[in-house]
Length: 379
Image 1 (cartoon, rainbow, N blue to C red):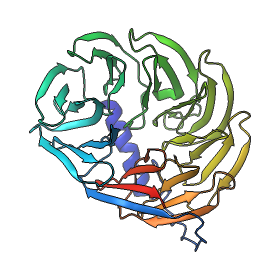
Image 2 (image 1 turned 180 degrees about the vertical axis):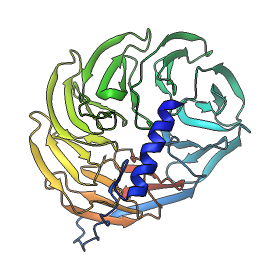
Image 3 (image 1 turned 180 degrees about the horizontal axis):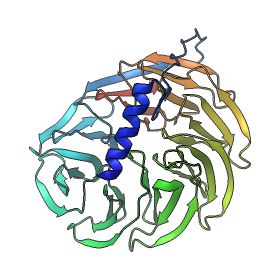
Image 4 (image 1 turned 120 degrees about the vertical axis):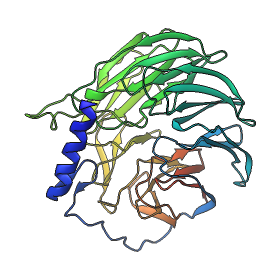
């Protein structure tokens, strides 16, 4: 509670002073006006659906041709990914704090009274229920036959997917101040779960035992005050081709060798918004909305795009061979992976800051803080 109050007080004082807000940079900066572009690639809105707001901890999940979503009211929807038609729509009649993870017909969500629920996707019937030590503020991760949950007290816990029995639990110590974390875990098959931590740490854990396979420092806290030392990994790390990359707020972007944890390179940048990779580059949205590309092997800066500064830009994802970001005025932008230039744009109708989209290869799911869900396709 003290940690939360301290953070709230800091944010309030900054806002009243007209200085930098926690995430959006200085309030004196106006959003960069959108310049006209010559479209080289069509970006289509295939369908949209209005969900309940806020949607910060309820990113949709793609599963076997369907999009599965949940909201804070306890509503779970299964949506046909091609048409946007609702296949099932159930209410748990329980408030939710986070969700969702999907395995077959089973959906896992966290409740506002600190429970982990496994429910049948079509009927909403509770299959099993487990008590947690605190609220779950991000979606659980499924790694093989285990469900991995992180609660607000920084505890990681593993449960059996089949029956919900707890298998292990590991506690972590939080710094005095932290940035709210709506999702910085990602499972890699059955073998590992990548966990971004407060204090700039990246942990790779064994989902069967909870033991750490290795730990790496994405960034190191520094500064004279607790506020200056806030350096948290608050977005999902990425794994590709034997390489793990992560980025920290008030810190760095860093890439590691996946098996040994050896640091390959790191570059100074502040981001709570996330990153994406393709075969050549790592892409990061900075706190001010600039989008950067770094060479995956050397960390060399390949390009930087400042056309969207101060526009509440989301974290990037790959959409085909392009880099997709969405701004706070509801525009989706396609950037060239080679030059960083904007080559496509579409108005999608979201309002306010947007969570990092979910890449589906040649499609992407976007959900705004207003709850609006949109499926985007390359034309």
